[in-house]
Length: 186
Image (cartoon, rainbow, N blue to C red; front, side, top):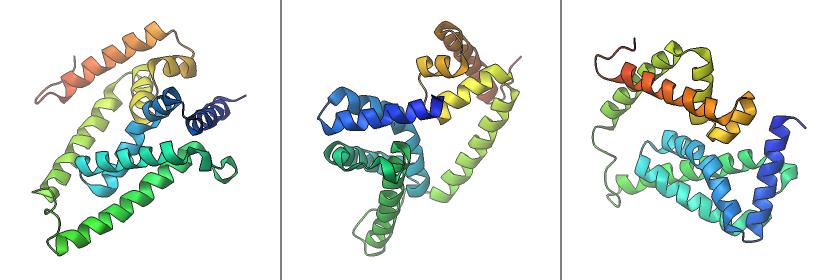
């Protein structure tokens, strides 16, 4: 079975276990997808606090409605992302209306400036990632953009867990050095 099919089978098993009330399965699904879902919510809402609140609400819904998941309609990953995206869009619209009518605090101050700073920081991070050796860059990208644990990285990349950990530690050290103001990795 391919790795993606195995991962999807694992996700379906977790949702089934959640439907039976198994907290460990809920924690495993949360650990696997929360970072990715938080990023998606933050992109729509523009506020980390609002994104965290929304993620909490979505995972409560997953806990209560896991039995309603239908594998024939899509993967668990898609099911989660559709929930987050639709709830985030709804919340963004509701917040905009509430702010217009003075029923919610204004958007975070200097949101446009913060967005510009975030874009500049993202560009710096992308550049720093390009400077990493390919084996380190691949591990960092899989860990942060796909939310894989060290054990999952080791399995996917066919490496010992210790090698994964040491490569990640070296990569993070280089990134810290490169991203420090005026910093440049040796």
